[in-house]
Length: 53
Image (cartoon, rainbow, N blue to C red; front, side):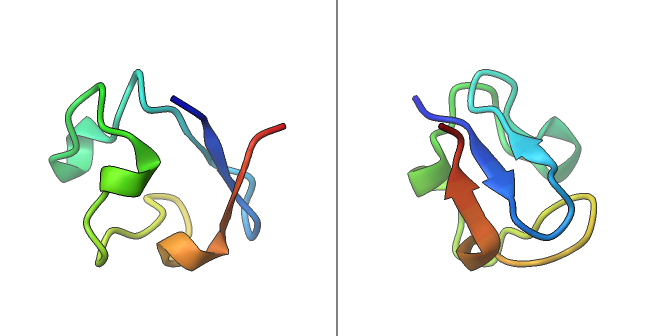
């Protein structure tokens, strides 16, 4: 599973960690995040994230 970086604040979503503070379990791929999920650091939506190369 790929990591994704927020293009606004550079926070990285790592699927092996998830986002437990917001109810996202480890092992959840970026594609499987809810449509209303936002960056926990700056609050932008999934459309502001890009795959980490």
